[in-house]
Image (cartoon, rainbow, N blue to C red):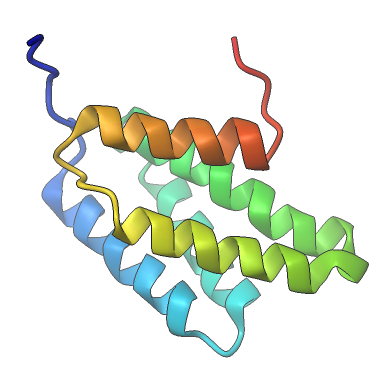
Length: 114
């Protein structure tokens, strides 16, 4: 079995993303909680590829609310699901993280696969 390298991001960044994902799941204002997660990931983009991908993901989800307000309930449900899914990912397992990102970035948010 091929050894997959671990996620290079700093433990503090991963812990912060975990906390913010928990907040998205519990928030009465899901959009505001999602926006905080997007902002935090954006500040950490230099931390590595994961931060950039999370920034793109949460940017797309928050844009969904802003650009299609009539779909806000659907977008907020997707935010809660994305947060719940993230909390269920073993962040030490690169393959699991990549499956999460592939699903959310491409299948849900519509980013093109390259």
